[in-house]
Image (tube, rainbow, N blue to C red; front, side, top):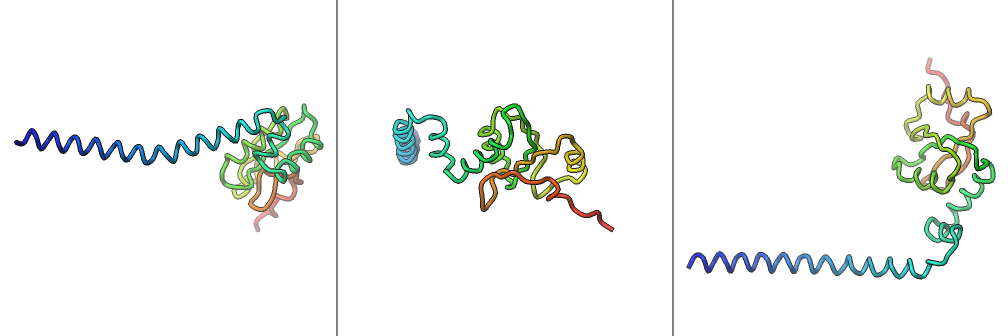
Length: 150
C-alpha cells in the first residue's frame, strides 16, 4: 500500500514540475520568437542604422558628436554617470577603435586620479557615459575638480 502511495506522490510531483516548466517556458518562447522576429526585420540594416534602432537616436547623436571630436586613433577618459558600469561598456563599444581609459564613477571620483588626468598633455578628453537625463557627452575635466577642504 505504501509503495503505491509513494509512486502516486512521485508521479504527482513530476506532473506538477512539468506543468510548472511548461507554464514558464511559454513566456520564454514568446520572448524568443519576438526577439527573432525583431532580428530578422533588421538583419540587413547597416551598423549605424542598427545602433540607432538598438540604442536610440538620442544616444547615437551623442556618440556621433564625441566621435567627431576624438580621432579614431585618439583616446579619452571615461566617467560612468550612472552607478551601473554596464552603461560605460555601450559607450566604449560605440566609440571603438578609440582607446578608453576608465576614470571611475561620477559619484565617487577620486581627486588624486583627477589631478593626474588634468596634468596630462595634451589636454585630456573626458566622456561622461549615459546620464539619467541625457546621452553621453564630452565634458571639461575641470568641471569635476572640487575646491580643497579647509
